[in-house]
Length: 304
Image 1 (cartoon, rainbow, N blue to C red):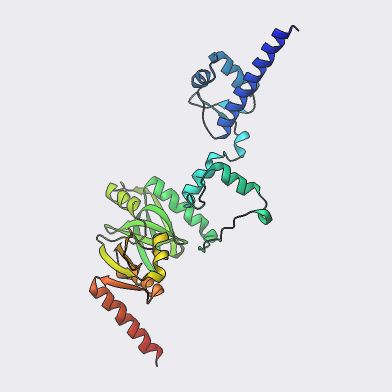
Image 2 (tube, rainbow, N blue to C red):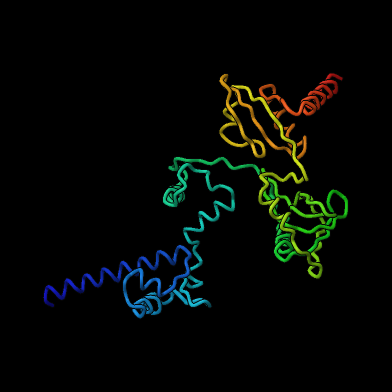
């Protein structure tokens, strides 16, 4: 073969290898590919792409019902790399590592545990494996907008389910009951009955309210609360939100003025008690007095 012809063959082979590797990479990312877009991307004829997908990648790529090309079902047994980011978002760990790149995450997964430079302490959470069938029923009821009957804290309930929410290690069901949006601990739901024949139309106001919430306390109104946080513990409030819709302003002495919006006083008091005496309720005054009354009552009981 003349040198010129050999070089042309090598160049053609390199382009083919680069094109196939590029197509494979996108397929393994979980993409559905259009042959016309691929032809434009690689500057080749559509027939060339058809040969790539139908012949050279036979058994790896297949055409779906929309005429796009994707991995065959067998090849899809592995999880596409981009799904790792999707899973992180679903699990609420998207910003767990300072470096959110896929390269960094894959490096961590591929490094054996004894040699890994990072270690994430597991967050305590309830074990709902025994309630897996109930969880599946609730998911189906939410998707299909079916009304539900169940027993909760020994009382019969009739509810319209909207969302399953995981908060602080506990799963809750957000549902409307008697016209009010409420939350129910999934672990306490018993005798669930999903009524497929009884469907409801979800209220946009409820869905928007749930999407905007960063907690599971559902009430019609909130109370704005002002806290004074001492310098000794200010860092703990500044580094992450400990309270709903938390905002803070640093004072010259290193303390923080923290503003939060609370649905119910019992949502706030456990947090304040944990940080006593470094955290004080400034407003509303009656909530500060309720905190003192509770502490005095506890001391009176302990002194008996």
